[in-house]
Structure formats: C-alpha cells, structure tokens
Length: 362
Ligand code: MRU
Image (cartoon, rainbow, N blue to C red; front, side, top):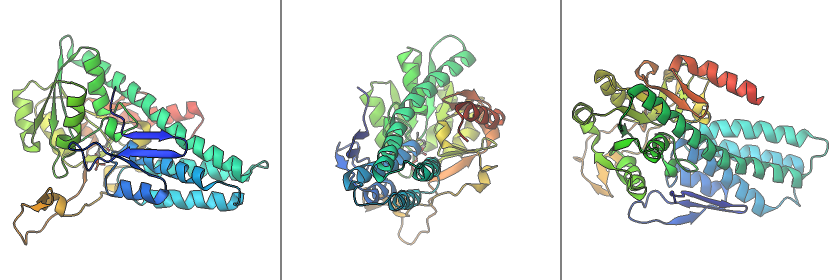
C-alpha cells in the first residue's frame, strides 16, 4: 500500500509529521484551523496540493466539531471566509491554498445567499466541498502519472527510461500517488522504469528525507545524489528526462518550484534532455502573466546554516534562503503534465481555459 500522509474521516484529521521522517512515522491530530495553519507553516505537511488539502480539511474538522446550532448563517459564512484568509497566509508561493480559498469562498457566499440556507446546511456543504478535494486530487494524480509516462515513452521510443527528479512530489506532498513522483510510479508500474535519481534538495532535504523514503518504501530502483551532482548525472547516467512538480504555474508557463529547479532545467537543456513539470490544474494560476509576479517565500537562515540543530556554517556569514525559484517556460522542453494531458507551455492557458469551460467553472 502506498504511503498515506493524510488520514481523514469526518470529524478527524491526522497528518504524518514530515519533520520527523524518515526516523519516525508519527501521525498528529489536527483539530482546528489554527493547528492546520501551524502544521503548514512549520512544514509538518508540505507540497503544494497537500498544503491546500490539509488547510481545507482542518477547517472541515473544526466546523464539524463546533456544531452549527448556535450560529447564524451569516456568522458561519464569515467564520469560513476569515479562516480561509488565515490559511492562505501560512505560506505564500504555492497557489493551491489560495485557489481553494477563492473557490470555497465563492461557494460559501453562494450557499449562504440561498433562500433555504440554514447553518446546518451550510456547515454540511462546506465539509463536503473540502472532502471532495481529497478524492479529486488522488484521481488527478493518477491521470498525471499516466499522461506523463505515456508522453515520455512516446518521445524516447522502446526500452526503459531513467528519470531525475527534485524535491518531494509524492504521496507525502499530495493526497496520494504524487505528481512528478506519480509519473515515476506509473513508469515503474508499466515495467518501463530503469532507474530514478533523486536530488538531496538542499537546504531542507525534502529529496533525501522524503523522496528517498518513498522510493525505498515503494521498492523503486533509485539513487540519491547531491544537488551539485545533477549535471554530471545527466552527462554520465543516461538520464532520459527530468520530472519536477510545481508550486505555481502561471499563464505563460513559467513555473515556481523548489529552489534548484531552475538550474536543473538549464542543465537539462544543455544536455538535450526533456524537462517536464507535472502539476494538477489546482497548481496553475492564470491570473499571473509571468513568473516575475510570483511571490517567493524566504525561509529562516537556520535551514542553511544548521544540520539537525547543529550549526555547520561559519558564524557571522550572511544567508539568503529563497525556498523556490522560477523556471522560465522556454526551459520546460518536455511539457507541462496536467490531469488533462501534456501541453507545451504556450498551449497551457488555452488548454486549461477549455477544460474549465467544459466543467462550467471559471
Ligand atoms: O517547500 P516545499 O517542500 O513545500 O516545496 C515543495 C515543492 O516545491 C514541490 O515540488 C511542489 O510543491 C509540488 S508537490 C506535488
């Protein structure tokens, strides 16, 4: 069975504390919006889709447990809207929580306006909305995995492929299966995966701690490399493609993802290796035209200067610690893999607009 980072049933949410992995597998109860915010901020849960899912489910759990009997429809509506704004403030770069807040906010305003609206009904519909996210993300990830795997196999022809990946984009970063790691999972399931190289992902080591853990857990043949070994790995190890995830893909295809993504894309282009971004449409933000508009989170200097709480950097040195970088669209040579298919960066906006028109959403 694949790893389950989020355990949910109505009224109860537990997350696998990713700060303790791989040494310890400890599930922690999240019973309020505040605890959801704190878990996201502290990176007990991380990865763009998982941030939004845990944020919205923390709201659903608190809403379920607080009951609705003493509240008016308007009080409940405002509590949901305030909670959503608060959750968005936990981390700025991944767009998923902001998008979920916008969509759930719109939904709750509409529901509250209905003639038949009661606090009980509003409570029920908000909880169901959040629960549906969990299922949809899992389904989308499976589609992303299959689209990405088939696309790569068509490009490279017969034989097994070797993939390099960065950060953690697997079951731990999503509702399950993963995005870029989902493609790797699909390739493995199809018997077409020769090997995976996963980067350590400095400074916070999501690759060494989390992706390596998932790959070992799933018994996928894999090797850990330091980030500084990526170019030589591409040169020496017959890498067929690079697959990474995304925190925000904007209208022209520029993509914010874990810091180090940009240099991987440059190295891949130099070596003529296709570079893919795998992300659900919930990680896309068509309201921004280009990557320079994306807010990049800066994290505490200790992530760079310390290892396991022990300082390794020379005292007094200055530190810059952006958690993400922006990969320009022209370096995404393989394509952007979504649940709707694989698109060149220039095709993405039209494809997503068409898909959402079909669904009747905006
Ligand atoms: O800082 P993190 O660990 O939340 O960053 C995660 C990434 O950059 C992932 O690649 C991205 O969120 C996609 S996860 C499916």
